[in-house]
Image (cartoon, rainbow, N blue to C red; front, side, top):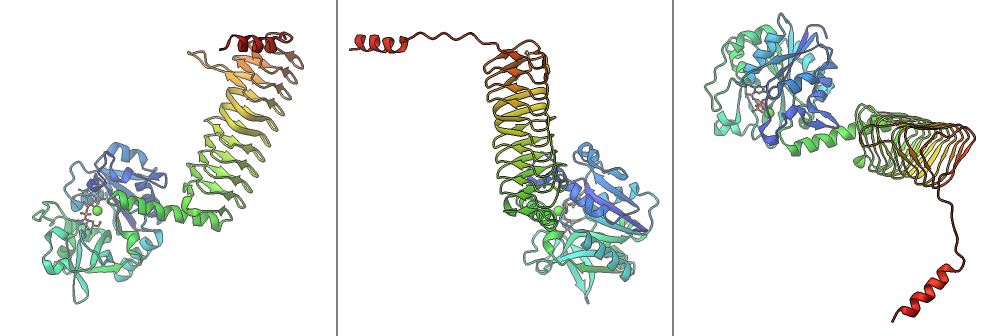
Length: 462
Ligand code: UD1
Ligand code: CA
């Protein structure tokens, strides 16, 4: 939007969160609260946006996307002081300023757009986004005179009749930048909290003959900031529901949206079915026609089409190709790659392991730092011994290898294509292609030994 500038206030600690973490850094649907607010603000394509930072400034600054300018407010002397810090960072800005608090992640783009266009239409000096609440306690009250806004009084400064006013200041405003700059010079801190209130500019502008407009928000819940953990949880629910609705609208079946947690940054193709209790975080991509049975945790992974993830599997930073089957109870740790139509079954753990197309590791197995070819059968209880207490070593298994159950590979070790590892083997040396590797003590059978032993024991037993 041409001639639009934005300030996001995010210097406060957020006392009511009772947290060591600054309020705007608290995660909401998997991302810091501030990022949701910034997304909505940046959707208006302002000429320039600044975020006023103070508490845990370094952490907040590190989150800012390129182009968003931090404005450090060294002391938190109130919202007017914070707005001044923001304006200083927007040096030379002229036109309309949209000011929002970083703790209003639910404030949607449409509401912000509506506020800006109302402000322009009214040619106002200030336009306040207001809300009408049954319980206005704690908020600044909108004092109107003949319908137009005369001033805003904070809860702590309000007289009994002002406290009865149900129209409140949401804390989101549009300003004419010149008018705001002038008015800020006259703000004083002689009030109940000894702070420089941004809300005082309303009366100041009015006194100078300026115009102040107010527009009530359609859904108050979206405009009110998050102040406590209870409100954080409520916002989480709203954002989750919105994300899930977006996926459902695009063709994903979510059996129980209330118990499905998908991050906003995920991508899921149509006809994938998600059962209850799945958590999909980060930049995960899931292809079409997959089935996610209950209880999986999938983070930052890329999953192809037609993949079946049986329940209670944990998949981190991994890649799974078309048609593969994972789980139940599988754990794919970072750097794992599962080829097309491969199977990773019950209690199988992969770490930096790559399985080729059609390879199966169906039961009770650990494959770490392993490169496994195509159509390999990994028997139950196979273990790559990749760590000697100091360093990690690699196991390489060629295509079409058959690994019998209960085998161990003492890495580094390489098994050639088409080889057969006899069950129960401990492989310490490379195996040539098409060879049989067998490393177990030859079996001896003693005829009748068990029976005689039994009889002897029962004779001596009283
Ligand atoms: C403010 C409004 C109040 C409104 C309410 C809506 C004032 C004086 N009051 O009150 O009318 O109803 O919001 O939620 O503005 N901040 C800074 N630096 C500071 C002080 C605050 O960056 O020095 C930031 C905070 O981090 C927060 C926002 O400004 O994001 C609002 O500050 P807060 O102290 O929460 O104001 P309220 O008392 O809630
Ligand atoms: Ca607040």
